[in-house]
Image 1 (cartoon, rainbow, N blue to C red):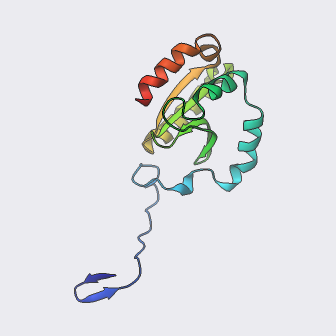
Image 2 (cartoon, rainbow, N blue to C red):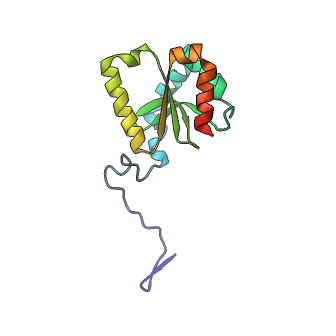
Image 3 (cartoon, one colour):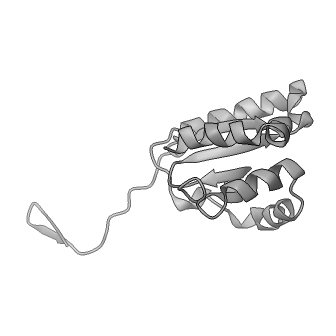
Length: 145
């Protein structure tokens, strides 16, 4: 109950967000995570992970880095490879497709969106994970501590 100038208000007042407040990072709530329309896509992506994603997942799951990661996690209109809500950290595993010009532009747009939400993004290539998993994990360990 709130007492304001002699008036007692029993109900929570709701102040709607102005359009764009979520994008500017002023408010981030659960409504942008794992939206229902992503459910099938996320499930398919989890069952069709690349070899590099599988290798990394086996190294970061079960709090092996001291924090919990989720795989194929929906954030807004995007699905990220791995996400740690505690650290607000996204890990993306990039295959060769990400190096085409049209895809790098889309990646920059995604990065901007995540940055505006106050999320950090780290990218590794499939090759990095397949050939240098120890250095990738060392880098992630620095980031998570």
